[in-house]
Length: 354
Length: 269
Image 1 (cartoon, rainbow over the protein chains, first blue to last red):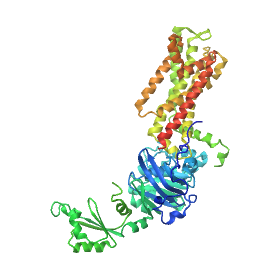
Image 2: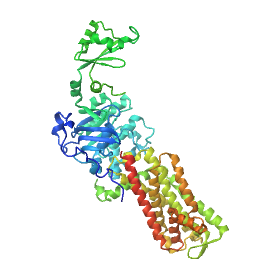
Image 3: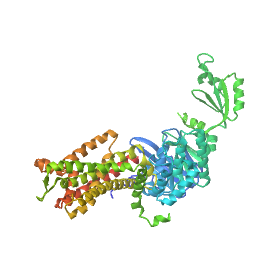
Image 4: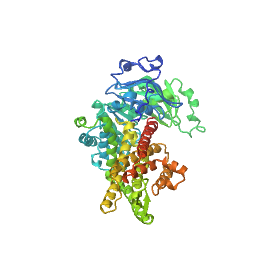
């Protein structure tokens, strides 16, 4: 038969960085664990991984390794290249240049073998709306080559795992967003995958639904399933990820555990100061240039946001007191622990969710 | 997993998963399937027997005269096979491809785009075969009632011949659908199907046309299908039936090849 294979023959992985030689430029973010993992031991191994759509570069030479059993995250705003990276790992998007192996296999030539060991939770729910909840899982098991009996056994078990048993005969369309997500996760688990690829698993869900999902993902991690996820929620990354990379404009700008990143790029605490716009003359008080003189030496670093001033400091309370001593009278004062949001702000000068 | 070892090789088995999926869907609304069954029958009764009573008999290529219904029935069978294939590969395939995003989910499994394309063609053929079998069953019943519409033992080959017609149109229809951007574009498809149905020697011999137009009509796929099936049911085979089969199978294969290329572009960005 003359149908083409899923990968274009001979184009993928033929980039300048194929093979084991990694140019120095691509080693920047490989301190620590990464360099000791060989491609065969890695669940995912990427060097100089690049994706271009015509003239647009979606992923620009990124390097990372994901160890088996690890929960690994891509944190970044929309358009940073997270989804493109996930699609290449899932073997549904050919690699433009660089090296990518999944379980030591080349996606261009071993697509079906890789996919048989991976579960995919795409950003948009691609459930089969013409089938019921249970049927969605049954047929998905069949796509993986499971027998009907085995597919049914797993489907029933998974519906229980994601708490959808009582909806099993229902149509998919009327389910809530959270239920659909859980069903997609159940579907992604039908082949008992070694690794789950989750693209923004909780975007658009209410807090309750998110926590239920996080709990299920945490249980999977406990069972040894490798998790690879993208998110633009720092709390999600902190909750779920052992290690993460921060992506911005198609590149990786930082790598480490959530704690490491916070320690490396920001201070322990953040003091948030809000100034009333109508206080003083014509709201000039919330202009940093007015404040600069008064803040000098108060803290290591400042970040002016449209609605508030962030002061990065080891001791928020002490800094707040010092600010009052200098005569600053903010409308509100908040001392909090630093988050990955601050890391991102530090690295890019922008918020994660715009 | 054990059961797998005794089943078909995966490369053959995987396309059948699409058939299983579609069967699951139609279990919910199996009456829809029957819609395509009645259309050719209505034509058979109105044209074959109704208009046929006015027309009387028609001369075949070998000079024999046969009742009009005998002339029209094989053409309606070919049209039915064409319609069955087009139904499934136009609107239904388009919905699954563009709106339901069905295949985006399917290709995250070991299923390949080739498996998807082959599976959907197989499904279109199976669905079309239901219509063909239904139509042939009605003809058989009419035959028992003394209204013999098949006048040659070669008529037994009408079923596989109709499948060949279905394959040709399924491949071409599916290939055309991969270029469709919005529902309105399907009007153009109807613009190709409708005249073929009316003018491809379906209701009268193409000797009614001037020679140049005859050659043109002879090059259309439905004419090849009508010629093939009529030659079998009326017992007037000529060397051209080989051309019919080659033409239709080639059309299906080329269609399938285009579908593979197009799906690659549409789904594997």
